[in-house]
Length: 100
Image (cartoon, rainbow, N blue to C red; front, top):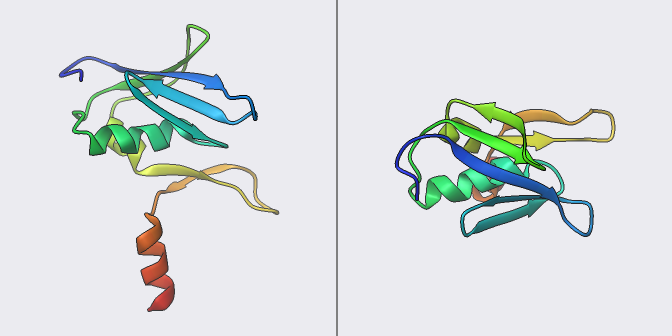
């Protein structure tokens, strides 16, 4: 686990066309936003809040100053709305909000 510096997230496409994000031994697959899902896994594993970048085929694709802020984002899409960034809410919190 890195203690400082930039955390590199390697991006690729899986066989189904979904995004695959890798960092060390951690791998996440998602239709959209795999890098954000991987950030949540890394934060849960104790990674420090540091700069991050995603790379695809050796080229930097996205970058930012805070891994922990990346972990709080997701991508939403709908029938009438294009893909957009949104605040990530855990499934348990969504269910509790609907029940209230």
